[in-house]
Length: 94
Image 1 (cartoon, rainbow, N blue to C red):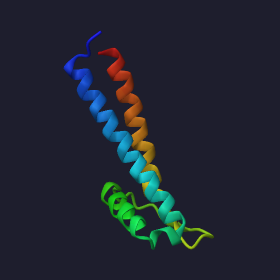
Image 2: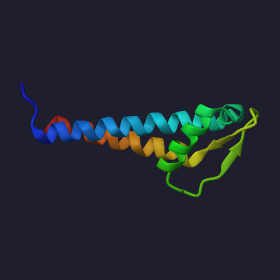
Image 3: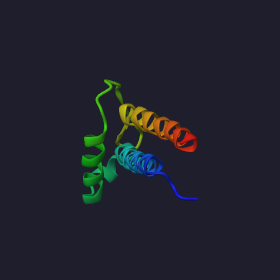
């Protein structure tokens, strides 16, 4: 069965949202373990994650691993994954 152009577009958007969630989750992990943020790859991941994270105004909580937990990034991951789930329902009904 061939996919409709609308289904392909929704699938593409879903794939982009999953990639954004992966980058944000990697940023949360790197920021949580503060030592990782000092590495070269950690800096790149944090720059990407910061560009994708809107400012919800949620506090950053200190961790015992010399880092912080970024609640705004965690909330963004939740919103992105719920949006992806809704798009999966929409795609199924097309």
